[in-house]
Every structure is written in C-alpha cells, then in structure tokens.
Amino acid sequence: MSSRIGYLDGLRGLAILLVVFYHAFTRWAEMVPTGESLADVAMFKYGWVGVQLFFLISGFVILMTLERCQSFSEYFSRRWLRLFPGMLICSLLVFFTAEWFAERPNGLPQAVDLLPGLTFIEPGWWQSILDRPVGEIEGTYWSLYVEFKFYVIAGLLFFWRGAKAVVFGCALAYVFGTVVLSLEYNYPTPVWQGLADIVTALSFKHFGWFAAGAAFYLFFKNWDWRWYGVGVLFAAVCAVMVRHLSAGPALAAVLVSALFAASLILPRVQQWLQNPVLLLLGFVSYPLYLFHESTLIASLVKLGSLGLPLPAWFLPLPVIALQVLVAYLIARYGERLLTRWLKTGVTGMGLLPARPTGAQQRKV
Image (cartoon, rainbow, N blue to C red; front, side, top):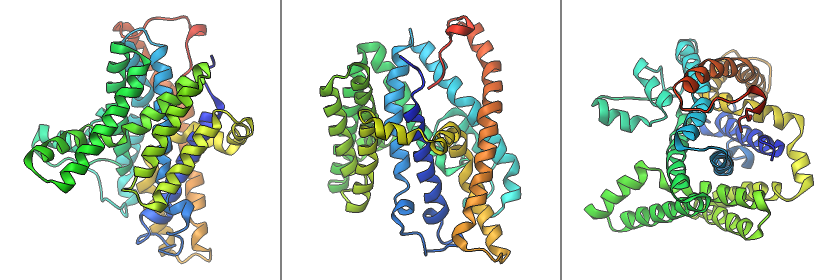
C-alpha cells in the first residue's frame, strides 16, 4: 500500500486554503483593508472548517501510521520527527521576525511563549506548571495541542486493543465530552464543572472527527462498507454539532465531510483534488499553517496604510503567495535537513528501528 495518497495531499491543500482565507478576510475583519465587506462570503466566513478537515485527515493517517509501527515508542518517535522540525523552524521564524510585524493581532511574543508550541502542550497547562502567564507564538497552534492529545490517546488505545479501539475509543470520548459539557451548561454543579474541566483539558469535543477519519481508513484498507457507514455517521454527527446546532456552520462542516467521504470512492473527485495547486498547498500546509496568521494580518495592515491604488480584496494574494514560497522552502529543505539530523539521534537511542534507506517509508 502506498504511503503517500495524492488526494489526501489535495485535501490538505484545500484545508489550509480555507483556513488562510478565513484569517485574511473574516477572522480579523476589523483590522484588514477589506473590513466587513467580504467577511460574510461563505468560503471566508466558514473557512475555519478547514481545521475540522485536518482532523478528519489526521484520524485517517494516524491509524495508517499506527499499523506500520511495532511499538508505541516507535510510533511516538515518528510523529515527533514529523511535527517537531517544522514547529521549531516556524516558531523561531515567527519569534525572531515578530518586531518587523508589530501590527500582529495578539502583540509581540515573549521567549516563554515558545514553550507551548515546541512541546505541543497548551499554554494553560504551562501556566499551571510554571505559575506564571504563558502565551503562544501563534493562535493557530491550538489545533496542534488537540492533535497531540489524540496522538497519545490513539497510540495507547491501538497498542492496547488494536485499530477498532482507536475508532470507538475516540468516539466514546467525543460522546462523553459532549454530554458532560451539555450537562455542565444546564446544571452547573461542582461535579459537572469538574468533569467539564477534565474533558475540556483533554479536548474530547474534537475526538469525533478523529474517530470518523480512523473509520474511513478502515474502509480504505479493506473496502469494508460497514466502516464507510461508521465514518459517515460519526462525521455527520460532529458536523451537525460543530457550533451548537447552528445551521450555517453545520452545513459548512457537512460539505467538507462529504468531500472527504467522496474522495475515498469517486475517481473524479480524487482527480480534482490532485490538481497542481492543491497538491502544492498540501505539501506546504504544515509550515504554512504554523506561521501564516500574524504575519499575514500585520502585512495587510501595513499595505492598507500605504494607500495603494489596488482593490482591497487583492492585497492578501501577493502576501499569501510569498508565504507559500517561504513555506515551500521550509518543507522542501529546512524540515528535511533538521529531520535527518534528529532522526540519527532518535535511532541511536533505540527509539526507531534502523532500516536500510530503500526500505524507509515516506511520511504521511
């Protein structure tokens, strides 16, 4: 089975495009030159569903990765090697260029704010540990903290009871979290508030997306349509519930879920997703996600103040194009070089099996 699936890269490309457009036109409408004029365009307004699409992809890919690993330590080392190099490069890039982009929405970061991203542990946990305020380099990192918790829990479930445990364990976590948060909202007693704090800290409200993605992988593996039905069911429930049963957000989440499901079985959808633009965006999606938001908004504020004879809607495009170029350089050269260095150390520690170069599997 190929370790690189083209249309998954296309889905990654679409996901990052949605997120970037959401930030450029809607999330910070009060700061950017377009103001509110484009904030309600559906593709921009609901672009945040790109994160949910990333979660679906993660559920699929993580179960695939788990089945290729012999132990939890091997699995966890491979995920760390996949994520840490890009996070380190992008975090340092943002930190050391922050003063050039003083218009950043969340202000200038402090050195301690590097901790959450580099450890994939959210600021609230670090604040409790250090007993001092801890921020984060970029607001987009919140989803990486969610994914990190999923990686740990999925790995423990898989090496305990196998692939089905990942699917249904994550689904159970989602249901439990949703019920607890609903009860805490309606009956704010100390018991429910305590449980709500726990499920919030563990990010269980997002785990249904991972369960759906994992179920879709089991379908992909054996073409067992029962798993396809499970994936559709889980994704549909998560989509409807994504923003407290609100119609617009639910429809947007249903559409990206339907696209993911369709991509597994419809060749024409797969072909469309493998167009060069989406494949390029998919290739750079991780570093671009990590560093784009604050520099994009600060750049738009700067450009807006220059009074250029250009339509406001056009201004984000050259900035995004430049960011894609930087992300490409990071993904193509920076991440690979740093990964090779780190992999030597991790393999030497015995956390990864030494394999001949030709037998090494490509990252997914």
